[in-house]
Length: 320
Image (spheres, rainbow, N blue to C red):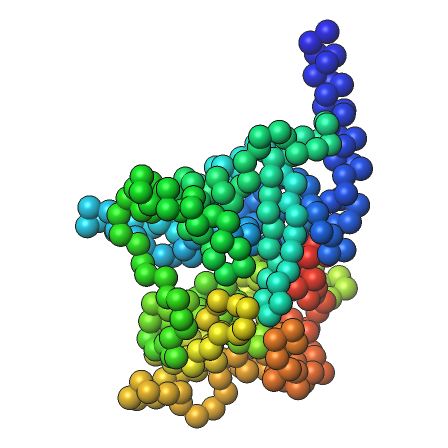
């Protein structure tokens, strides 16, 4: 009988998964998604193929370094691992939101029971559990809900608060200059400052594209990151930086620095080069500056345009 009950429970779970709103609305910009949580970045998660940021919580990028007892360690990598550990073997119901001026999607996730088809009573919000663990900080831009949880973790010296952490800039620096470390196809760390290339969007690392009918596919997200590495390799990079209303990220226009390190050399910016060569798209949600270069690359069938691909934003919404 125990095996029979186990089988019935498993069948019930499969039926619930098959009829769940997340699967039915996948890729349609659903307000609620259901499923397991996969960690993709600093507070970025994927549920039912949809990418979003945990509302009210964030942490350092994977390459960031903290110190404890004067010894450096990869706190960004550990913090993202802690989030994966907290979400492990649990299904979640995530409510998604967008905010004016911010092109990211944000979600609050609570444990969900696919058998009863409802949130688990007393289940803790995933972002709150992460901040309470000490491996994330309260992200104050849109909601202040987790500030008290961060203060509690700080007082207890949990996680990143057990040592010293990099400063989180409240205001955008006006510029950044130095060697570039490439995070993904449109994100760099320049002279210690995290910079997102303004006006462009690029495939995510796991994203695949096609070379055309009968030509097979390739991981275009990885290729695009390599292209950006090559574009910055052996160069000192200079970025002018701004922040958009309602968005606390550093948006930069970047290029090779001049000899004095006070500006960019003449010629294409890296932003323009990535779009001109077909390896990034003009991000029309934030700017139409590079749209002509995108049309030119499309007409020349170069870069991503030599085959077929899904717009990165649509891909993050679940379209495959």
